[in-house]
Length: 123
Image (cartoon, rainbow, N blue to C red; front, side, top):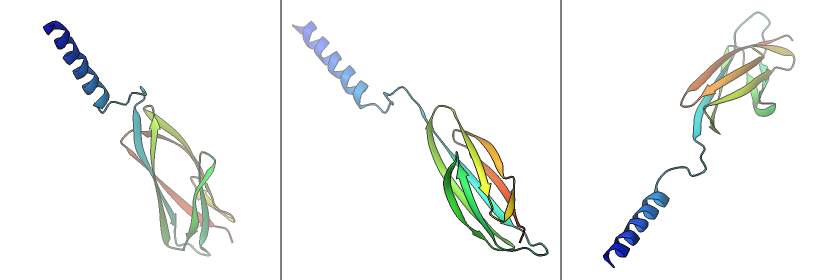
């Protein structure tokens, strides 16, 4: 009788601690990281405000306009399964250009990747 009671207590403890723990039972670790993009429209002869569109993996993520001698910032936090996340970044400037225009970013867990983009208008 004591042995049965002891087994029931042990089973109850295993179930309690096993089911109430913080482990992710899906078997997948979640990683997080941040992408920060700074867009700069430097003063130059004949410069004009630059309209921009930021695409991440082909999807529109942000858009706006940067004044001459101005800058804009874009920041996005990501959560994913696995150790690294690959992002395709494209900056479109209608009637102008961005340097770099296209970039592949490898985002590691817990890190912030920064990208500085110089815009220019060709009006």
